[in-house]
Image 1 (tube, rainbow, N blue to C red):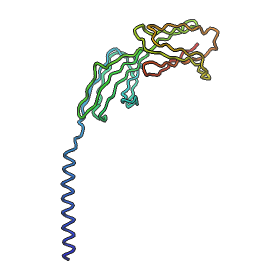
Image 2 (cartoon, rainbow, N blue to C red):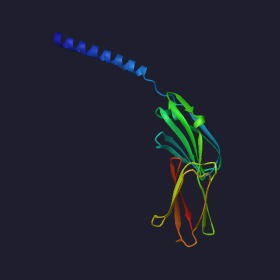
Image 3 (cartoon, helix red, strand yellow):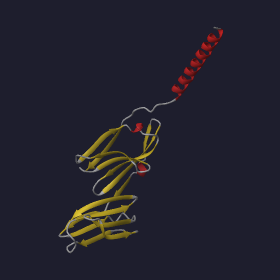
Length: 196
């Protein structure tokens, strides 16, 4: 009987000390508060895509913009783990990059690192494809043109530091159908399809 009472006392003491330790851990851990951060963008175009990406470029959130005009939406960015992230607005002619950092209960936008990357502009007229890029963008640009039917490479071009890129491609003697331009510039890869 003495042995049973002694064991019960030890178990009770152990449970009491574990519960006290659990309360200390529970009180010491801070949970992130839920706070809504409002993102407001002016002059967005319908069909643009808004994403939230982490530092490695992985997409955490993606939304297609369904109206042209002003865009405003609240995001609970505090639910993200601490680290560096960015909003990316991908429109027909440019990427807009808005970087931010998440730390415990704090969101900091880096206004100095906000950036706009312009895409080359393509249009088709009379079986000719016109390609141009603004003169103020001197970053390296590589693009390849593929025939979409079988993805055969038609042409590849690379520009290192040209202040302006302007090209006209005559497709009048080329096979009719869809072509895909695949661009690489400023660490981004994107494509645009055209029909001849």
